Length: 97
Image 1 (cartoon, rainbow, N blue to C red):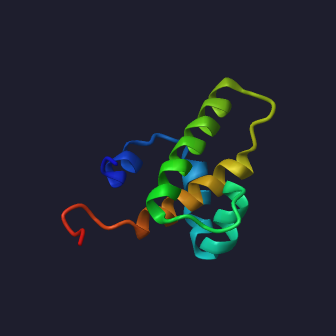
Image 2 (spheres, one colour):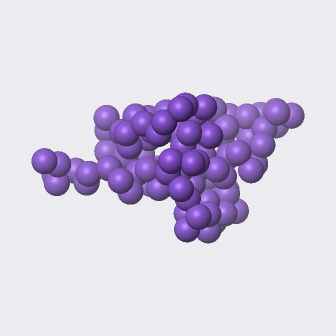
């Protein structure tokens, strides 16, 4: 995996989406939220979660830009919250054991 911090820093999203996601970080519950977002019986490890969340977020961003009727801003924010929270759980480059 490439440096997730750099990937997240390179994301260009509307300020309102990012602010909403940052606000929601305080209520993020890994077990509850990841299972619901990913439709899994148990939360995967942070690396797997970040990979899947990056793909899901990219899909949401495409829907947003294309004006697809099925686009959900609330779901987009939920994915961004999970992505930010999971990225914090990854070891920093150069600090891996």
